[in-house]
Length: 294
Image (tube, rainbow, N blue to C red; front, side, top):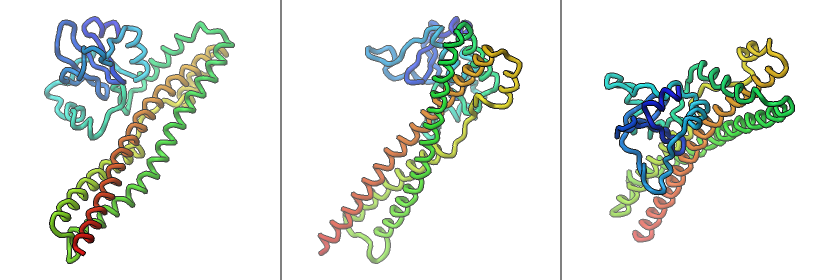
């Protein structure tokens, strides 16, 4: 797959974003949810100090194995695939950010199998003592990624409760703009602007926290029944190799999911800070109105 793809394209990566350009061409395509979509020239591409790096064949193999890429040389999305183009467009990527590396949420089973086979091949020549040590390290890494996901989902649940209370406070402050006790003059205009900012940011913060909690992904558990059945006839060394390979595949998948969830919570925190600041400013406008009216 990699050899065929690099015959026609050159690939570049920056922080998990993979783009390709046909050799001798100028148009770029980005891998989003397992499909290639046309994009403009990436920012800072080719400039001095740019973080974009060209991927070698070996690096592309590791990239495809980590992010479970089906076909690096696949054709780009056609003009008739309107829905596919829409859900991978820049506005939709802002609303619903994709996973790193162009990975999909529901990947095909054969991609997991191919990745396990690649890992098993890499460790096939290792001695039994080394395999035992690799098993312990791989298991620790797998459990660490599970903990990362569990922790961020727990934080998201608590955050949603706090965001709900803050949203109620924002709605209560809307009463300052209505009725007999509403603010007057310039303070009413400033309060309305602060309330608008707080409302929009509260929605954005709640949306990101909800995504971190509710959006589900296909995972690759190393001890699933199908994998146990396939390993039942292997010898001791082969069984250990297969188990380590499954652990590494599961760890890679969980790390991608955990990174995505943590990034959504960081965004939720940034939006929520603006909400708190806007409420503080709004309170200041109310006090100023009372002071000047008195």
